[in-house]
Length: 388
Image (cartoon, rainbow, N blue to C red):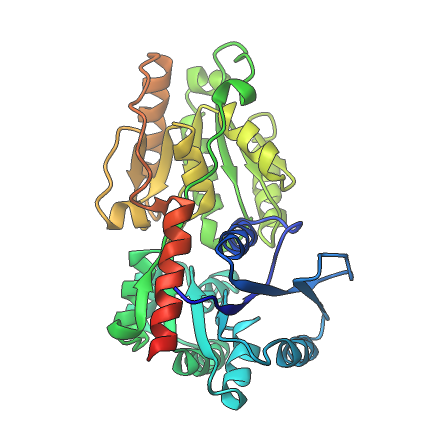
């Protein structure tokens, strides 16, 4: 394969935390190790030193100024580049699409791992249902229509669109008019193997800790999780042993804390700040049940981390794992809109743990891929585009 000049455009990059940042860094290092010329352009709140191949764009609070700065930096950086690989359709995606207007020889590729328009509708309280339902009903307000026009512009300028899951790919093919020939799936990296013995601490008493780690946003459906938990601890035996911890930051945090206060859950529910990766892994290792009951969860890094550590997980049916037919006794699938179902599956997981029946270790390679495969698949896509 020929050596390529690639620009990775991402909203976040380490030391910033998050799955997209980790993926961008791993891909940057993987492609660089193959001899390709790789540069990263990302937003920074401060002009931190990131290295000669990492370009930091000031993250202005004024959205149009933010896009303008990103376009200017990218314009200079993109001269002579073969590929621009953008990690979303709007924040970095729009400036990338504008570059494509002027530098037509550059191949523009997007990586799509979620749906900003649907998430924004959830956060604004305009909608409260799954991703599929949102596109089936298409009850778009002015803001949604504006976002739709912007993302359609980005999609039309794309030479290829890489999805991180079959679920999101099929939504975009069915409802966004993305041609099958211009799309493909490249999964996330398999989480780095870490010995449980290095992470685990002695379990205290018979307390069963349920953990969620991630953004505290409406899409994560955390109030329904708390409602299910509250229903369970009406039983005194369960109240004495069940605890739940929500770790992260986001616009739902105040609403979650208010619910905890008003329903007297302070002794059983703990809300913590976001964590770095090492602390995330320690929390997972020292919890007994993992919870992710999102209204739709495309392919969360948190889920892969939990499964890689062989932890039972209460997982939404609106997920890549359920969509692709993954079955394992570690996974308890739930209807994210059904509080009774969530409570029932937590109880089933609790009984398994209390009986000290170790679940079978899951193989997660069907929805996360080894680093070598992820890098190789990108090389194949990029070279095929340049050969056209």
